[in-house]
Length: 478
Image (tube, rainbow, N blue to C red; front, side):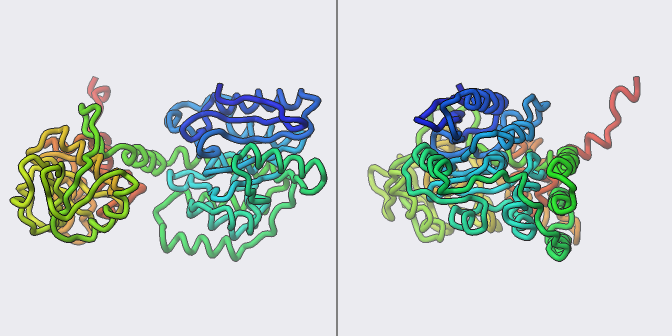
């Protein structure tokens, strides 16, 4: 069961169990309402606690539902019913409370958090805005200026700051969210802490200066983006609406406008592209290498050293008979590597293609490097990719030629202001030549390493869309 109810003394506990991150699936949303009904019917329960099991509170929407028609109950309706609970309703947070997870907490009457908890509304990173009351309830707690900062940036707020500005009411030193929630509920019942219905708090004072400043900032830093400007409109509406319900209606209108935006589709495309770009198709049960030799010197090697102990991987500067993988700094000779070891040559973005079986093309910016398979087995590439990932070096796996270098050279050789189009043309050629395992890998590398506009979803996605739009459909000739 995704959500269950159990009473502890005079406190009823609504517990969410939807691993790994307790995402707000339809089953969880429905389960919350059922458990709430059970708690309201339990005459011995004087207060209710909402918490989650596992390593985190609710970390957001269920990605398995992205792109599918919404199923009742919708999250705004769930939160409305939570907020209307006649018994004190305490949210006990741990790990992260993000997106809809924080919106659920804002719909509760008191928020307690374990130390180390982080909260946030990161929907802007997917081309959206918080659509379940986040733009209407958060300003009632923290004001217009802070709400604009938090929602337009999508940043995570740590527990200390969240308490300082009023998102959460207290930080608990308890060991578990259950202990923290029960203790907070007892304090509320004893009158030692005050529960408040967020939606009934006064609307924040209008702050036209903060609204104008944020619009000016966005015009300067992200003029092409759609959802940040809608966020500003929604927060502004919070100060002007005659009631919470009116503000929520305006928020919903703006949320649906974001849902219809092509930028939302492009950003979600990249979200999925970033999930498993290190996976080589068709290779199962591969394990990371355990004995690694780092030949030469490179700043990346320092990063690998810092993660090696936690990953249970042994790094040496000199290969030996047990070495399984050699990483060669640029300019180092592969002859130093023993014959039994797989060799990966680090390659600068501007360098000529490596003659090593595997090369790690180093991005000059961003979180992803590219692991290119020139002549190694698919299993060796997968094991090398898993090793680098375990050492906190994220990679995108490709084959035969470097996608990153090809895109970089295409952009560099293009006429002024035509780099974007050059990458789009190059992406089509790369896909046709089979250089990528997934076409989305091209988009991910271009956006993360080469500054292709994120909201467009990547050059291959754009090139494909343009081709689709420019090609007459078969129906037009029938």
